[in-house]
Image (tube, rainbow, N blue to C red; front, side):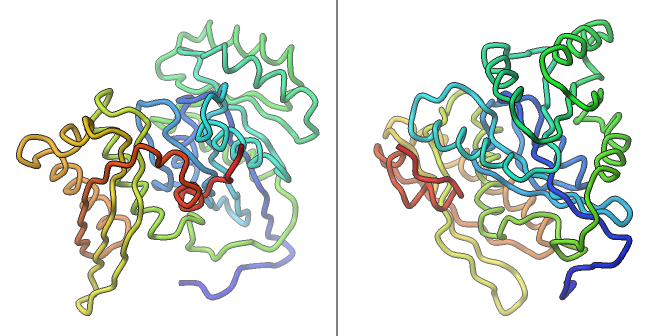
Length: 305
């Protein structure tokens, strides 16, 4: 691990806030820009809950990428905390990237976001995602429509999934960053602790394997993170659900589902951490977890009214 950050006359460093409606592909784009996985993804909207920073390098430039929750109309305390985290992620940003899914659009959430961006002082760029799946004519129409509403300095067409157009976007972002020493060591790719990362990886598997069966009223809490003498890591986590009826869904027949979730999360964590991982999961029912201030703090969310 590098002991200190790098700084000389050539180095640059800046903050890029990545915002958009839920499920626009923000986390996938951040992962592409970093060059490896730092944020969890799934087909479910609102997968990202708190601000998470990915750290990317482009030549002598360090890009601090703030991956934010999708901005939507909040209804519950958790929703309000997520939207609050998204807007806070744009503060002091050198560039704000608005990522748009041209296929789903989600106009009911996108247009209020467009309106909110109009008066903001930060440099704003429009990124139309999923060029691998959207007709070119539709992309051009959307680019013209949104450019007439907000003073975007640039418009980029990318596929966060395949990486198409991402190198060009990354190079341009690097050119816009101010001269500065790097804020993080050269080999650091995220600000997330290993404990938070481990909980996020397990939560991703919950979403991927249970699809629509399990609602958003679930969380993964860290309990223990131990370094064993043989160099392996022992991780204990608690899957919190809101209703007793959900317990059988998470466990599966004779524990088959939670075993599959644990095996997939364990394999991915071993790959990320570079060591053998022993992962232990158990399920807890807590109807009021969504009002638990401690859980919000664990997720990196502010406690909002």
